[in-house]
Image: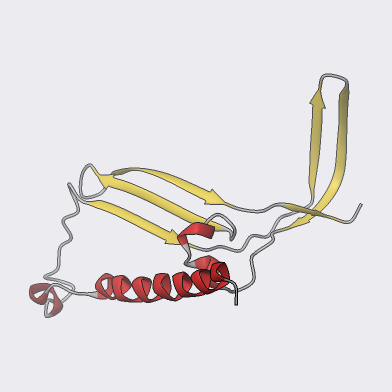
Length: 131
C-alpha cells in the first residue's frame, strides 16, 4: 500500500468520525424549552447567526440557450439537460473534496426575529444531453 493511499484512507475515517461527533450537538435541546407547549413557546432569533449545508438534486425543463460574442452568435433550441450528482462516497463529508458533489451552503444573521441577511452558494451541475 502506498503511503499516500494509507493517509487518504485514514483522513477520510478521521473526518467522518469528527463529523459524527460534531453533528450530535445539532440535535440538542434546551432543557427549559423541551417541556414547553406550542402555546407557551416563542422563538427569539434576533442577534443569532445561522449556517446550513446540504446536498441537492435538480431537474430542468427544455431550454433555449443563446451564445454570442466576438465572431459567434447562435442559439441551441429545446436543449435537454440533467444534473450530475456524485456517487455516494466520502466526497460528501471530506473538506478536501467539498466542491465535487452538488451542494447548498447558506450563512446569515438575524436582524430581527423575522428578518435576516444571508449569503449562499448553490453549486449545481447543468449537463446538456443529446446532440
